[in-house]
Length: 201
Image 1: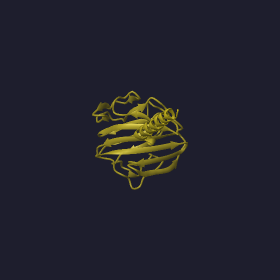
Image 2: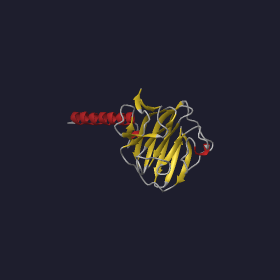
Image 3: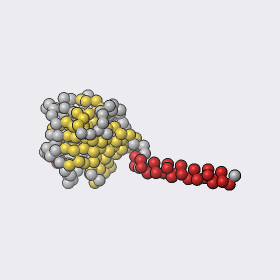
Image 4: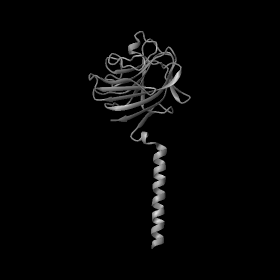
């Protein structure tokens, strides 16, 4: 009987160790997160506009389009969330991550919140790392020519933006757009997204 108990105990310890290792491999930071884009397909997105969005080398890329912006728009709508995105743009690119889009077919900074990616914006206070017409950034960070990470937290009327580990918007408040899809923008230049994850809050 003692031998059987010892075997059962050993099995339990082993199972716990395996579970712990699996949890560690997944990473506690991944619990509760949903991958919207991982470079393999665009199943969670709808193309809006005429830019040449395509899958290439593990990312979504656009580098040609008309005079108007074009978007990859999420099929799902989101209200309170934390979003993480990895992207690359060239030095002249006009891009951004639009959140809580209230009109998924005609997206603007008036009917959504535009977290900007635009190093050469004429008014840099609403350039890269800012939320257009809601929260300015100073000094403006640069995104061009490198892979970057953007983290956006939207909870009720409160917004936080973290660009490459540095907070560019800290607790800005606005309540005009309560919920809606996420949209990845091409407005000019070369734009690439390789990872987009989201977690409901």
